Length: 393
Image (cartoon, rainbow, N blue to C red):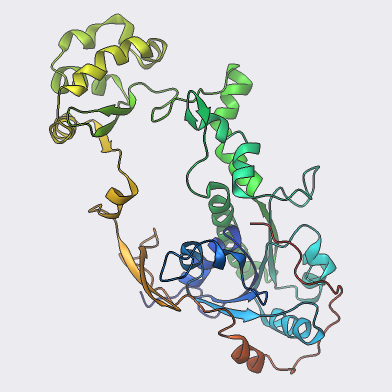
């Protein structure tokens, strides 16, 4: 896709790990110029693993299209360079530990006082205020603190959502907020100060379980590959041992499941199972009917019957099976050690996927950026003399 909506927008990012890089990757895909400032040892996500030709899967996923600038904020010359870049920037993203940006002279109040059109975005674990403000925060910790892990897993034990859910939603929230701020600036001429956190992002995702607990007196139970409040909605084993997931949303579909898929008209009329509330109340008794019925049908035939009956269904795939999924769109992205196929960005614009620019080697743009932003502007005093303080994810 050649139409780059954010072409000409300069983003500076003091970022590590997942949340902030997720946000800036989206901005880069839309054509923004993203200068990623790294320590001498690099974003620690570079070392999470080495599965992509020696590169980290996390880093390859989230850092395409960026320019890597190595800088030491203990060094006066590097601090002055960062100040000159920020002076020309449209957006500054940072996921430094709370308070660290202020100590380094990169606080939102100071910068926006000097550059009123600048949009600042601070990404943190728990937010800029509150009793948990200074707590270190990583994805699994946030999944646990928000109660997400307590409703995930099997009845026997809680579980972690198998991807970095807290980081991902935080990065997506930051991306949306920055786009809104850019549009707001077009109308008002003024930048914005944005704050987003991992905790707040997952807290919003937890709205339905929280309302059940607060107003219904009970949080949803852990039910594995099933839905806590819709039945039948979950995985059932077919005759060939493969699991098929079905989702019945209304009484028409329930009747079709009984009559067309299981050939059991009497089941559709059983008063214990008429209405979702009754089916939830008699989940165990219903499973005693459904499990043997599905176990008598091979998975391919079961999917065919469900589809013909207009009932939503899917297969419980492994990651290897997902890799071969006919619906999976992939694109190639260049990395320092070779091209890698990754899932395509999820949004199509006018039917097109954005062209992905390369993943940068550590410090590959340092010399060019230093030359471009040579001391043509007065270097402001950047308070603080510590190297990057611990980043949040």
